[in-house]
Image (cartoon, rainbow, N blue to C red; front, side):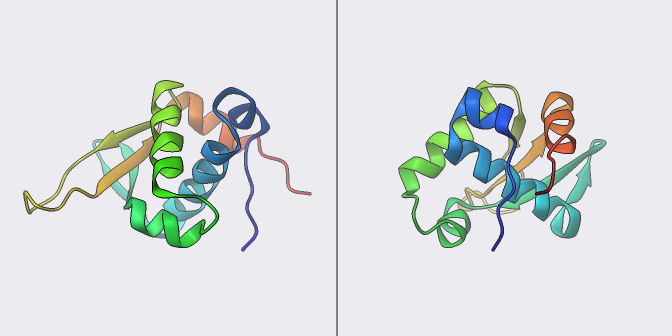
Length: 105
């Protein structure tokens, strides 16, 4: 798997957050659902753990928290079952701008 990430996100939130953001950005093209005008990606920490086996669950949780705190993504828990804690994530306008400016090598 080739990971693309934003240098700006890596500098402000850390490389783990930048890698997670790059994965979410790629996934929104194929698995995104439009809710209230935003493209949301439903993704569990377990899924991200399988994608990034070198990161632990705490590292992934911290990466997602940092992305939210920096204002690059939003999170939403919109599940049919009250036992399902999987979240959906969407990029903010600032996050979209940064991800669109990624240059391929």
